Every structure is written in C-alpha cells, then in structure tokens.
Image 1 (cartoon, helix red, strand yellow):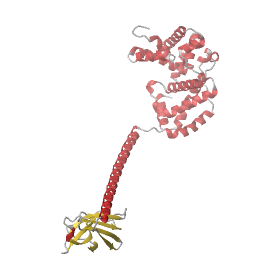
Image 2 (tube, chains in turn yellow, orange):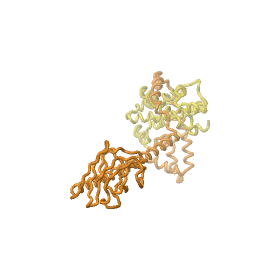
Image 3 (cartoon, one colour):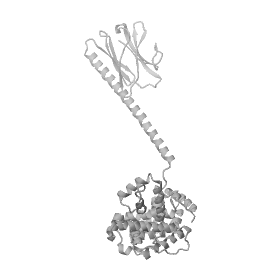
Image 4 (cartoon, chains in turn blue, green):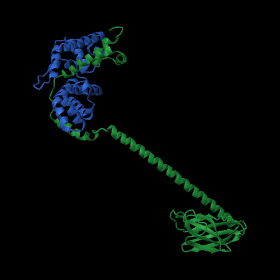
Length: 181
Length: 242
C-alpha cells in the first residue's frame, strides 16, 4: 500500500469511514498484535492492547504526519506505548528468561505481500542476528520491556556501566549496518 | 562524549527511552541548542523504528475485528472533531448569549427601579392621604362614574387636594388621563396628568393647579393625547362639583 493511498485512507478514517479503517486494520493488525504479544507475553492482554491501538487510530487519524515516518511505524509506536502503559498499570512484566530468546526475538516471518520498506528492515534484522547475545538482550529489555538502564542493570545483575556500554555498542552496530544497506 | 557534546553517549539510550529521567531532562535541554546532537539522535530514531518492525507479526483472534467494528459505532459520535470554524461560531454564539443576558439584566434592573419608584410614590401619596384625613377641615367627596369610583380629599385651608380613583382602565401609550379644576366661570385649569393602573387597581394623584383651591368649584377628568392638553379635548371620565 503506497503512502499516498494510506494518507487517503487516513483522511477517510478521520471523517468516520469504517471501510477505510478496516482496510488499514486488515493490513497491519498482525504487526500490532505481534508487538503486543512480544511486550505483554499474554494473548488476552495483547488483544486488548491491539484494540486500544486501533481505537486510537480511529480517533486520532488526523494527527498522522507522513514526514515523521510510515503509517506502520506510527501505529507500532502507539502500540508499543499502549502495551507498556498496560505493563506499568498492572506492574506486569513477562519473565525475563522466557522473553529474551534471541532467535525467537529476531526471527521475521516471511510474507508474500511484503513492502519494500519492510524488506529493508528485514535486512537490518539479519544484521541484528549477528549481534552478540548480550547486546540483543539489553536492547530487548530497554525497548520491548520499557526498562531504564538502571533497571536493566538490576534485572540482569550487571554493572550499570556495562549496560550503558553494551546498549550503546548495540545501537551503533545496528545503525552502521542499516546505513550500509 | 566530548566537552562540546557532553551527552553524546546517552543518545542511543535516549532514543530507546531507556535513559533515566534526570539525565533525559539534561539531554533535552542540550538538544534544544545543539543541531549536531539532534542529527545524531535522528539517526538512532531510524534504528528504533526498525526495531518496532522487527517483531514477527502474529494473527490476532478473528473476533477482534468484529469487536472493533462494534466499538467504532460507539465511538462514532465522538469522532467529528469540532473545526476551528465551528469553534468560532460557538464563541460568537456565547458572546451573543452573554450580550442578551446583559441586556436582559439591565432591563430587569430598570424595571425594578421603576417599580421601586412607583412604590415610593404610593407610600408618599398614602402618607399624604392619611395626613389629609387627619387634618382639620378636610372634605371627602365621593366619586362614582360607571365602574370608576373614588374619593377626592380636599382641604382648602391647606390648599391641598388628593384624588384617589379605583378601576380606572389603562390607556394605550398615545393617551393619558388629565385632571381639570373648574372655577365658577366654568374655566378649566389643568391639575396634572396620570395613567390608569391595572396593579394595583387604584391611582392616587396629588392635584396641583398653580392657583389657590379656593378659586375652584369642581373637578373633571378627561382622556387626552399623551403629554396632556391646554384645555379639555377628549372624552370625559367624570365631573364633580364641590
């Protein structure tokens, strides 16, 4: 779906067009639900987070600005915030040991309808898989579990300095790899 | 980290939202003035978006789509956001409403003041009537003309006359009642104008002739154009001799 098409759909959604809304839902619900599942580790909670995310899309469609990124990125940003809010609200975090399997985390399911943008990110993921496990772990906890660096240090029993160094190195490697694409 | 960019090492953690709150605030203050650090942060944000999309999609339960459709119907009324134009109309309507309320309040205050002044006049004439009734030499003359009845309190020694009339019909705005004092030659002298009253159903009017009451032998009331006439021109309500 081209960006211009998505913008037109968002305009229709902002006017209350349910058919346009469902087109976006059918296209991206899997991504949103998948992210909710990753963060919350529970199907029921992930379903609620997905519902909340799309209701926000319904009520805030006119807030989207294409200059800041794709519609999918915008939706997933909302989904991440919604899921992390739920985590904080319920003070509920999935067990660290079960949620940080690097192979599972970075696996990307092939999709025949993949867009070129997603293909680009798949390339990034290939690079991520090559990262040391401790780098992937610290990014998992920071981004998908919403932990601060101090909380990561406490959770893993690592010195704070080590957490900072590993997180910084991981991000630099990802950025370098992505820019080389 | 450099002296010029003291928060450079914090940018990756900040991009992921993992920087402690205090450090994040200090970094944000620096970002306001450092374009180089803003550009560096933008490059990490691109990586952050990639991390969002890295998570494997998973098919949501089929029922979720139908549940959302039902939710949309409930959210439908909240959807149409008020445009700036409609907000301007609302503001205008509010101003007009306030203006109308203001005008209404002013009219109410004026009406109350009129009522207050009327009551004060009645109290004053009531006191005058009591004073006249108590005074020696006051003559009380009964008046009856159809439904209209009343009394003329007359005290020639004190040169004072008070006319009290009941059931005097209210006139339209272009007309008025006018009292006339009549001398022995039949000449009429205006003694004042007044309106009929529905509430209360009587009027009390101090008669002022501009000459001694002893010069007069009768009293008449006619209907005249608003503002009164130099001589009677309209319908007579009653005439009495005293």
